[in-house]
Length: 197
Ligand code: HEC
Image (cartoon, rainbow, N blue to C red):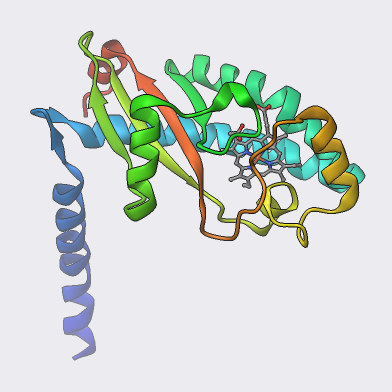
């Protein structure tokens, strides 16, 4: 019995992988959406890791207030560096932005709203062949609530600092698992063909 399980093991794993892989090879307008989603997720992950690293360091050194500049002044340049490394264009958008320059409008807003019911990546193709990938950004860490949560989560000092930097801040009052916004990542045609598996 044991031996049969050992033999059955790899087959089972391969079977699961096949199901997962074919389910992932989703076509949008006759094009391979799963490839551009994977590229976009890689870029978003890299940006998230570099931002969280800087955030964690700043919070450890001086608390949440000390970490605000990481988001306010560094988030843009960190994201720009990752975008350049990855060869994509990327920005974070929200329907309740902290930075008014990051308000989701038009198709971005429509995508965000539909993700409230179904928080899955979405892909659309531009006329020039670029893929526009939109990924949900969900509040998935208690750390986010220190700057985006309700009155009980955000301490007074942080609230004051945020109010000074962002007088029109709409980005508080969130709870765990809320959709906070989206990544909008444009994958150019050159990158799509360069990554052929
Ligand atoms: C130390 C405070 C702080 C923490 C912790 C923090 N944020 Fe933010 N967040 C900010 C600030 C400040 C901005 C505005 C940045 C800017 O001006 O571009 C921002 C902007 C954003 C935006 C871009 C849209 C907008 O509102 O302008 C998203 C999305 C976002 N945060 C998600 C998160 C998530 C998810 C977490 C947890 C993983 C998190 N944040 C943790 C302070 C924070």
